[in-house]
Length: 269
Image 1 (cartoon, rainbow, N blue to C red):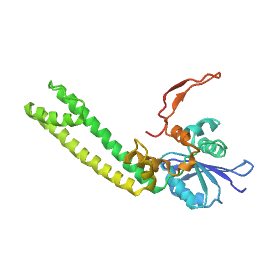
Image 2: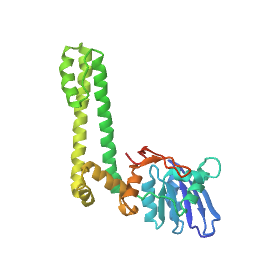
Image 3: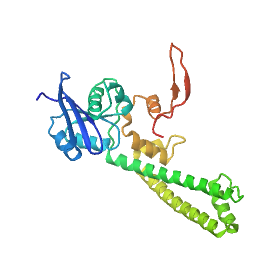
């Protein structure tokens, strides 16, 4: 078999498709393997360029393949789709990835370390608790309004007034409101615990400390940037970083006329 120089891997939960080409672009590998076979299959290859879509598990696989001596590049799935030549299936996806990873102007996603992903896990779980807390507050306001009690928008006031107003409600409603307030208290404790952990991790991170010197950036935002970006040298300037996280206007320009819209929010919220 000819020397494989580039491999595209279509990631999945159980079955993975591989597409490999040699230096001349000829297809020399087209194979489907199970999850427990993937590492052994890649380990048997000589060091080459491996392309994958930046999806669930991609960073973990990237770290494993780098440990085997391969060069790994991750790409956003939307940048790979134009290189798919025909119908969507695992084999065609792997071929498209193999083609896209060799493009000189392709944008790549740096492989995150396990520590970075652990920090991001803190942010994801904390965000989920905040969303859940907001939903409970809205549920409280909706239930209380059914009994003619209109609560304000401020969450602290909702807690206080809901507890006081519940005393005059029927016993079943009083119990339901009490359970919601208890759940709110538990979520407040969980969120507070995560906030303290994030602040502690930010104090231990020198890049986060430097970011916190910028006006408007606190521990949570600084640590999220450090965990998400990793090596900021991937960006040539601040404008590239702003575009990467979505702090740029949406654009629809044609015929030499520039039409700019609102902030696109294309990045990681």
